[in-house]
Image (cartoon, rainbow, N blue to C red):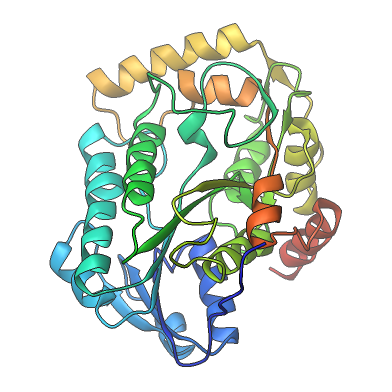
Amino acid sequence: MCELRPLVEGQIALVTGGSGFLGRAIVRQLLEKKLKVRVLCRKNYPDLQKKGCEIFQGEISDAELVNRAVAGCDIVFHTAAKAGVEEPCSEYVRINVNGTENILNACLKNKVSRLVYTSSPSVVFSHGNIEGADENQLHYPSHFDAYYPETKAKAEQMALKANSAELATVALRPHLIWGPGDNHLGPRLISKAKAGKLKFVGDGNNKIDTVFIDNAADSHILAAERLYNGSPVCGKAYFITNGEPKTIKEIVNGIIGAAGLAPVSATIPPWLAKAVGAVCEFAWKNFKLEGEPPITRWVARELSTSHWFNISAAKKDFGYVPKVSIEEGMKRLKEFYHKK
């Protein structure tokens, strides 16, 4: 493991997307270390201001705003991204690609020495199972089935290519983040379960990796503290998970069970899910339907295949060790929902 260069009191850190699920967890850890924290987000969040954060309101596609937010910073955590499947390609390019370019340019212009970029394992997903593979065994596919992984892959490559003596960069690929405060995965599963619309694509026994929110945030801090010119962390991408692959049925029923809902057993054949996905894609594209389609071919493929990874590189290079197990995380999630 390389030398530790800790984040210390008084340093200035910017967290793009700091109002999001992962962003807030990173902000919390930075504040605990007594750093001065800036947050670049689309809306104003008084609760973050009360905690001492300086808010820069707007989008990362605004180069002038990004430059102001980055100026004077010691480190940048870039978590902001356009996710989902419903937006036109131009929106994913504007935020994920052009926004990342703005961040990189601002870091170089303002002589920021460290950038931690939040990527996604979806940048290397193809059509088959991924079972215990590491970063060296999985490569960017020649074709992507959705705009989100395609633009995240472009942004990741930009961030890693920007690694230099002036700016040390690293990309982290957390997979399916969950836990208390989740405003995406958990609420969506719970909503569908309550409506009786939650089904597994296939038998639900395909294994997936996930990561508890505290562990995901830990990985960003740990990587940042080993990130400097010449360290093994520079210019590399790392999978970040709990290191506990479970069947998708176990994970989904664990999350909705924490909210007091009965386990789901309903299934849909993968071929049918893909067919429905193709119809949805056609309808949403040609009839300009609003909102997110219930399923797409890409989502159907991801839900019906195994995705779990070897995280040895993160453990070796910057000492990442998942502190909160899935079992403990589910207990915390249950407590969170019971307090709501």
